[in-house]
Amino acid sequence: MEDNRGNDREDIFSKRVKAGKRTYFFDVKSTRSNDYYLIITESKRRVNGDSFSYEKHKIFLYKEDFGKFIEALQGAVDHVKTDLLPDFDFSQFDEEEESEYDDELKWD
Image: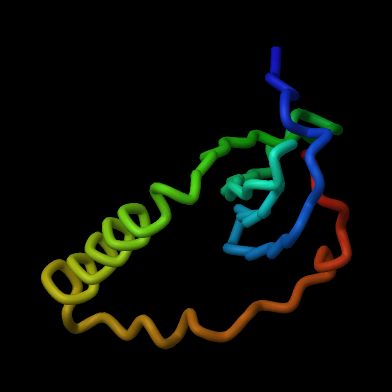
C-alpha cells in the first residue's frame, strides 16, 4: 500500500527530466506552516503483457539537508567523471531528448 500523506500539499515548482526508460520529477511542495521541501521521484514504466504500470521511488529532501545532498551528489558525479571515466565524453548527454511522450501526464 502506498503512503499518500502529503499529496494534498501545494505544488510550488515541478521539473520533469526524461532519461531513457526513466523519468525523474523534481517537485517543490509547501507544508501547512509555509515551509518547503523537495520530492525527487524516479518513475519507470513497466510492461505487463498488454498493459503497463509505473514503478516509482521517492526521496523527500528537507531544506536543512539541501547543501549536504548537493555536495554529496556533486562529489559522486565528479568522482565518476574524473576518476572512473576520465576519457568519456559526457557532453553527448547534454542535449534534451524530445519525445512523443513529452506531454504525458505526471503519475503521482
